[in-house]
Each structure stands twice: as C-alpha cells, then as structure tokens.
Length: 548
Image (cartoon, rainbow, N blue to C red; front, side, top):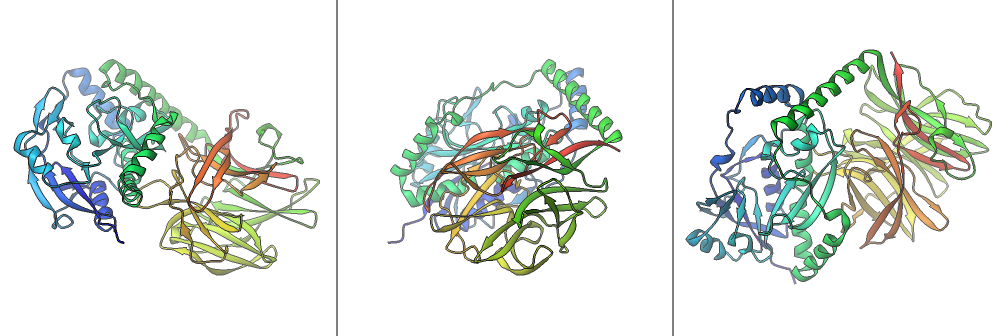
C-alpha cells in the first residue's frame, strides 16, 4: 500500500528567497515522499536589517573585514534572491505577525490556531525569525531548522563568520528539531565541512549547498520508517559524543575582532610572501617493506619536473615489477591525464608515460582486475560520468568500455568485492556549489561492469570532510576490512586516514577511523591524500613546498 506523502509547512520571511532555499523547496516538491501544503509568511525581522556600524573602531574593523574575507565568491552564490511563487503555487499561504519579546519571536492567538488547523507532519523553519513558544509543537514531528557554525547569533548571510575569522579547520552544519530549551535541541543530523578561511561568502555558500539536502533526506527517512522508528534512531544519534557540546553563542566584541583580524592580516601577508618565493607541488612517495607503512619519514621521494605535479598513485604488481598509475597535470594546461611509471624492487624508476588523456580532466586512476582482465575507473567528474576503461595492451593501451554512471557529480570511485557483492565508494555532490570533499556515497551491484548500481539506503554513509572522500584501494588486514579516506579539514588533501569498516550490508554501514596520517613529521611535506599498498610496496602522494 502506497503511503500518503508527508504534509510539510514552510516558514518564510516572504516569497523572495535565497537560492539555497529555493533548491531545497524544489527537491521536496519533486519528491514522492513529501509535499509542501502550507507556507507561513512572517515578514522580515527589522532587527536583522543592515545597521550602520557604531563607533569609529567598529567602522574600521568592518572595512578591514570586508577587505580580508568579504570579497565576492567563486562558487554559485547561495544567497542570490529567487522568486519561489511558482514552486509554491499549490500551497496555502498564511501571513502572520510574530510578537517580539527580548531575543525571541512568538506566534500566538489566531495565527497559531490557523497553523495548527493544517495538521502538518513537519514544519520547516526557513525564516530569519528566532521563533519560540507554541509554534514549535504545531506539527506532529516538530519544527526543523538548519544551522551553520557554532555561533547562532551570526546573521544568516554571514553564517560561519566565527570559524572564518578564527581560521578553524572545520565548520559544522546540522539539522535539528527546535525546542524551547535553546541549548538542548534534538539533532537530526550533523556534518562537517572544511572552512574557507579566505571568504565568508564562499564558506557559507558551499556549506549551504550541501546542507540543504539534510531536509529531504530526513523527510524521506521519516516517511519510510515511520515516526516511532525514526525518532528512536534520532535519540540514539543524540547519545553519540559527536552530537554533544556547543561553543559560546556570544557575538564577537570589537576587541576580539581586532585580535582576530590582525591574525588574518598576518596570514594573508605570509601567503603572499610564500607565493613569491615558493610553490606547492604534488609528488609521489614510496617505501618497500612487508607490512603497510604510514611513517612519512620512511618514504623516498619521486619528484616530477617543476612544470607539473603527480598525485593519486595506484599500484599494479606484475612479474616482480610495480607499475604505478597516477594523475599527471601540467600547470600550463591545468588538466589532468593518467600516466604510468615502473619501479623495480631495487628502487630503479623508469620514466613516466601517458596512458590515458581526454578533452576533460582525469585523475584518481582506480585500477582493478576482474575475470582476468584489467580495468580502470579514472575520476571524470568534469564530464559528469563515472567511466570504465579496459586494458588492451598492458600497461600502455586502455580503451573506453562504458559509463558506470552518467549525469552525476562524483569523484574518486573505488570498488571492492565483499561477501558476494561489488561495492562502489564515491564522493558525490547533489547540487552544484557543494564540496566533493564532504560526503561519501555507497552503491552495490552484482558485477563491477554493471551500469545499474543500487544506492545504499543510508547515503551518504559518511558526511564529514575529515574522513569521507576515498583515498585509495580498500584492503584486508588480519581479517579486518579497511578503507583509506581523505582528511581535507583546513585545506584540500591535508592528510589521510585508515578507517575500519565495522559493518557493511545492503541496509547497514558503519566505519571508524583507526589511524590518522598527517604531515607533521616531515616539515617539507604539507599534505598527503592517497594511500595504496601491494606486495611490499607502499605508495602515497604528498605536497612539497619548493622554491621557484
């Protein structure tokens, strides 16, 4: 029997909404599990209208802040105003007048009664009003709201300002069921993104393009599992330590801002100084030993010429030799291709040769064997595909076989055969502007050559920039299954992890980080983000600071 769609109410300031909100509305309206039946318009909160800075110091600090982190963004602006009337044409619209008391707004009397009469399943709070009181209980499953960053006092268009000014490596975003106890909300889900410490707008936009999908994901889960099961899972998540604790909610004082902006200025000057005399170059690093090695001091460097970088190495071991397939990118072209070089067990290295090049960017050449044939899945997000190539003459000739997925924005597809199924791990985004570093999606199929992959019901199975994106081939060790993952907190490719997969089935997934590898022991290496091991050879990549 087909379930009725969830009845959703939206709280908006007006029908001119930020672009990220319009995208959220679009996803919900096009779903088969929910429909927006009511739109509640609150009007804009006059307390949140732009104010002139007070005092000469505040004016100076605002100017400095705009100069350092207020520049226009490079990704789609999540705050660009859009008209939502067409998408919401089928919904009933109510205009209400919240009553302001101290720091909160209350919906009372006839306004509250009219919302209650709509028999809503969920009320989604997308206005700038700080609502409390009875409106939090008018929907069967509560009022849900999205929050970015730790400081809830930040205005919506500068969400994450505290993290940017403090140059913190990550910024949290979460969807919560609001309660009248502002310090103890019920967290539905939480995710972590890398903080863009150079741009307030890009930082907030990138997080919002990802986080808007929390709402439809949780609505779908509620619809499929039912209220009782849904909230039992939510309560279990809230017991977990990562959902507990919150930093100060206070606004930044002028004195604190002065200190933070001075540090930001020094950071900017240091970056310019380094850029004048140095550049960062990805290279390959290798170590021979029987067990896997994660000690960066043990690795020898394979330096590319200064006009290019090498990254994402994968190993194929044949006839006592190691063939390393990797991304090669010439700075003048700014487009990756796949190359191979050969390493003997005595460490002799043969020159690299290009084996695969397309009009679009390629990287992360995941190589695997199936039914006595060798295949490669290079990252081809720029073409919106996950492509499969077959080796026709090892190691130099590869021919396009088929697309495993199309019309997708996916990176670093990594396959693994496990318990009779083939599993595809891939970093993926659902809306342009989100980061491909943040979320791991899992699919399964009976064959690695299939074009029909079933999405895991818990997707994304990881939503954390510190451990989501694939970083190499999965491997077994002492009966345990491990997945290398990237840690891009602070900046892309900062480090990698070894994650143990505790449970993986068609309905469940759980992993835990067992080892974190960060470039602290070698002061010359500033980043490392790929790890592979085969027959005594461990190979990784690293970013080296070199003089111009």
